[in-house]
Image (cartoon, rainbow, N blue to C red):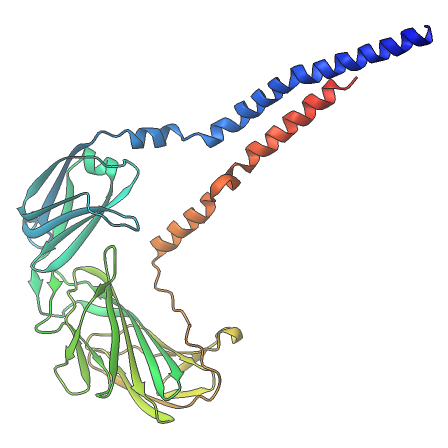
Length: 365
């Protein structure tokens, strides 16, 4: 082949390859779109949830003690989300309550709260369940008797803060009364052994969707603090924060007006000395700046004495004691597995890159 013809031939080949690449790119872009688009579009289930036009919701209020229809002062339905804005509420209700057609997300969890005799009772159901069946909520006859009520756990956290001791009680109370009844204060239902010079801070009951603040009063005997906490059947959790003047040594009484199956005490800093009858030391992580001891089971009204002294080491005031339930932890684990943003679509991006690489390789002579 002559030199001039060879040059024109190679130029012609280059033009062909350039045109081929230009023709291929629209197909590459289309392939990328087809691969990645499904991951970026809302799922069919989400679209169905958003288009829900509403369905009839019926709540049945029953007395769990007598198994008969019951009445209540208030009925509220709200989503189990951070906003907790009610989607429905009604007043002075009884028996089966028809709330009409409500627009609910089928997969969303909702809280049904019924307030009867000043006590809140709760149930949970999905939007789909609320719209497809009658949802029961149980209230209970009230009593002041503490029969069948106990503390399955009592955790006491003591931190030194300069001239004070910061004390935090974390209490798990179980009502196993038979027949099932709600224990109410007369005037108080629970009493803790606390010194007379204690300064009370936050007192919260953790039931339902948000913690509820309560107030304390004098107990039935000197040295006891009363808490008017309604105790429906099942578990009620409480948190009490207080402070006590600390003149380098202190004798603290620990006791509850109900039986305590198990209890423990955490102290900070680690050189805060603590002594008491039958206290058993338990290993704690060195970096936590905490010491932990467990105590013996206590009968109702029984008290033990803890002697505290010293504590010149650094004080950690931000120690957290988790009160999360197993359901909360499981929900948090599900959320973390879900990921966030475009990172959950990394697999689609990888497939797009592979498709582009293959097309470019095949386009080469």
